[in-house]
Image (cartoon, rainbow, N blue to C red; front, side):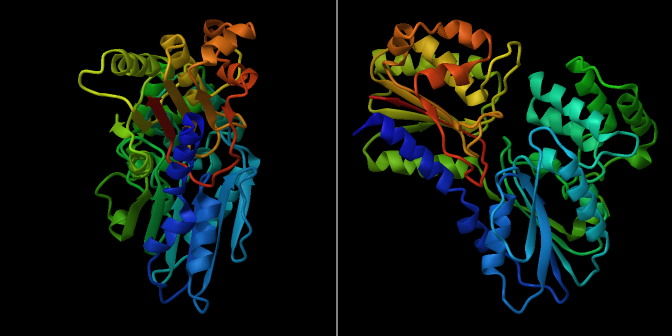
Length: 423
């Protein structure tokens, strides 16, 4: 067995378990009496739209459009695919969101609004609320992504600066709604995936202000005033749990991190490698989470009283990175660099950390690989791992080692995949 190839294959298995082309058809409803209009947003939305087209009855009406990240479009015939900015929203996303909202308002009770949402949808479905410009929304988003806030905190702010998220899309629609969702957030709450366009929003304008203050974000007076006005005028709030609009809405999670971890576990077990799943809801600073995982891996490797090699430690979720340097890298490569430092070249431990969408942060890699000789190879190249970590430059570090994992777009997204293989 080649450990490096084994880890790469396990990642491929995990991604395939969340492939929209296989999953979406199982969840499609019957066509309505009227027309079916498809809308959506996210890095998996183009593949989800294609899956609908491939499975929809030929004699049933079907049209619509979805928004996906640049480079993630697929060839469809009835559902229009629009590419837009991610993770920072742009004008394409704003215009597409405006068109989506207008089309949804025109649907009637005999029609069906079929939605497809996945990770990345919060940025792609970007229609600022009245009083906030797209330029201001871009800057708020940029600061939120750099400050170390959780995705739930980030989306609490985004929902209250949006005219379409936080259940507002559902509120604008008179037709029944089915939303098929591929989850990229811990806990799989529909309200946090793509900022929940069709889901009840339990958060408030006041909660959004709290996030801004907690992370000391420097927002414009206009942004702060919109949120303050929202606190004062409850009538402008996002639709809450129990609102009547949601009696005709179904939000259905069709893929998540747990399913992918289980698929990877089955793969390792087929190789007679024991598996320990550490959870699919792991959050916290990437470098700090890595320290805890390194301690567990070292305990198993050096003191195998309870857990014995060969064994693989699997985990998912969404860690965060507080950016203080000016390097390149995402949360998965940063996790792996911190793990490398903690393991200090310990033999017989291999690891992979990748994002299932094929994009670690904003880079062209999904993540990276670590082998027992990574530490020695880095020293031979004159690479100071601690200095690269301090500068948030894990991408550059692993590029020098030729250990980046580059897959291109996977057309799905169930968040992080981490595997630590101990032989």
